[in-house]
Image (cartoon, rainbow, N blue to C red):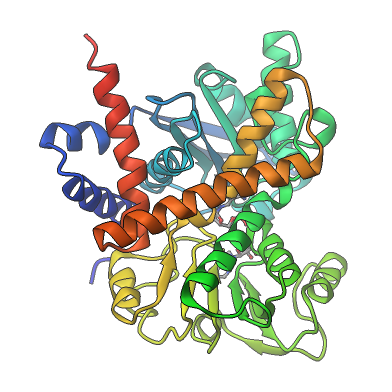
Length: 412
Ligand code: NAD
């Protein structure tokens, strides 16, 4: 059996939206082709003097509705196909939330855990200099993703600014606050996942207080989602990272405190479980917040959650998705559920442009307004067209990009 790739998944979702929107073959041609793809060699001098060369990518899938926008991933599995798939998803996500952006993604096929701090900095600066001609506040604005964080964004901002001759904070989002980052950006994706979870529970008629939640992935998305759903009154019963999961902890802070001290989530006294067992727990909500293809034709059958909220990008294959739908599980799709990150990235970019910074309350209120509007639209289209939430989200996002293509026309 061939492995279902993230690109196969993204193209199948787009094909379905094109059919449901009754778009033409010409539309499919333009919508299914990335606008610009760049592959670069990224040589790194290791601390021991050895030189290794990695492959770096930047894909600007669309610039039709505004500058390209999307994260930078450091992970051994990064390749061109995955980067194109994730850039495509960013395009529909930005359109769904009505942000004035296209979509992009980038990355390096490197294990970020294998890098010392100075190696990470050298690799990031070299990658930045290789993609420098195509990024910029009006062209393409990177952000953190798997394996990168605000330190990487600070190095990218500095490398770009040194070339420009003045500080250009708007070239990246997800920066440290003192460099022009936004309050509330670090928690934004998790906050948005929590808002999506709360609304999905409401629609399913499940009380929010005490609703049980299992979360796969305890990184920038999973951790903040755990904190936010707990604050709303839900009970996080299990979390996991790449090494496996745990259950039986008192609260999320207990796991976080241990993680900060020990660098792992193996809280003493807690029961261990595998990532597979976590996916199949009897809970109200399952939040995949790690990598692509977690829920497949193999793993979907035994999922017992009533709701799946996709914190990760492309965590469910089309076959896995069909099984979840047959089981009557409400799936809040990635381009809606994890859009809080790019929404607050947009706020950060706006604040950098205006050189006027908002307080945390303003960021959180504006995030909630945009997310609630998108959730309501997805719910309405889903009810009206009798389609799944994923199909509905794609109909809205792809539809807006197709409309923008038509209105701009084809040059020349
Ligand atoms: P991260 O690197 O901060 O965390 C990833 C987490 O997943 C870690 O806890 C890691 O141990 C765990 N993990 C890795 N492989 C795993 C496996 N095989 N099984 C279980 N856990 C595994 O990354 P992140 O920024 O939290 O991103 C997670 C997902 O969310 C990605 O799909 C990313 O594209 C998506 N996303 C991130 C953001 C953002 O703002 N960071 C926004 C939208 C979507």
